[in-house]
Image: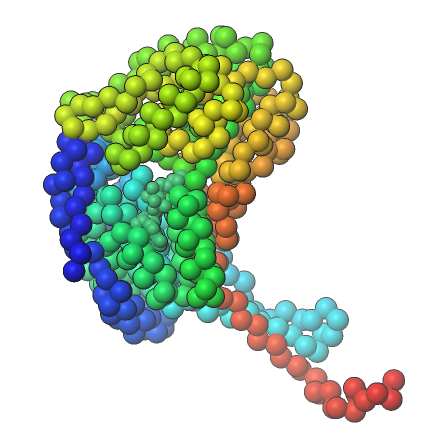
Length: 473
Ligand code: NAD
């Protein structure tokens, strides 16, 4: 057995020890889940909806315990509680939609009306979910709820950086009577790799580098991989934009959760004519943002959860400064009580030569460039190997839409930023290196867990072989 230690992001202490599940554990868990899978499918959608209702009740009862552990994992309190609320809300959302998402009944053939077809939806027996450390609960459950409702069983491996919330989650799952169809396993990349060898499809949320390994392993096993990876989201602020609203959205979209969100705004392009006024107002607002240190109950920004990430943030800032950027706020990773923190860091005069404009930063950093024309803004926004999401601000929705339609990204917020964090009803793909596979949002987020089988019926007489003879006419 391998023992792992998790670091507390507020103290820097390795204060949590846990056992990594090995390949044999994964095999045992997968056998157990698969054995329960048929009964789970036989329950039917109504039966499974009732059980997910029980999960929601159990999560409500264990809300405080889960949120408290999650708060130690992530060093933030209010967002931890919101993560639990979000999962309960997502269950209600899927319960309301699920009965309406699958077509039923027979359809006559277009070429030959005697041949009719009907769909049957066959769930994968076992779905694997591998999640990252930035929203440990949300990203463990976002695909899980729809997969369970579809009739799959699910095995989740959360990040080894944030393992504490798992115990109270398992208690809630057991209380809801779902332990046979939903389980967590713990461990690092080795456990994740073993999981991919024991499931029928894999939902992965994490970095591009690991996503490539997951995609290769899934291809070797001939299983579908749904990959939700990193981003370098641009915000384009056109000359007609309302500066007050645009700076509100830019700041929140960049620094919320200390920028540790895949859909964070990571690059800002502002029309020349309003650049100085925009930057001045953004700096004023950024200066009012505070750390939730020493009191976790006050302030806006929690610690940098993963200490290795702190090194990347500082390296990106230092690289930008060395290449001519000006630090207008923040700029230095701070150590308080053993944790690593960074205040909103506005970098003026950024260029695409800088790492901070090219690689995922995953921190509260706002590098800003100005542009002369709409075409230039679109070209700059698209000059990236990522395509997760983006945002456009303009004086009118029509203008924002016109630019938004030309940006190569899966979700584009118009006159706001990072709306995909708040709104999950719209289907979206991840473009370029930001991911692969069907949408996790919208109704496709449910349908992708079902293989579609076609029942094809001939209501007329079957054709004899003579109809295909060389001399038949
Ligand atoms: P990561 O890729 O380092 O790790 C993610 C998960 O993969 C962890 O559970 C890890 O243990 C596991 N893992 C590592 N090696 C593995 C392997 N060989 N096989 C299987 N699993 C393996 O990512 P991270 O640092 O935890 O998370 C941050 C990244 O996640 C950022 O790039 C961020 O943009 C991305 N992210 C994307 C989304 C999205 O929806 N697109 C959402 C949140 C985070």
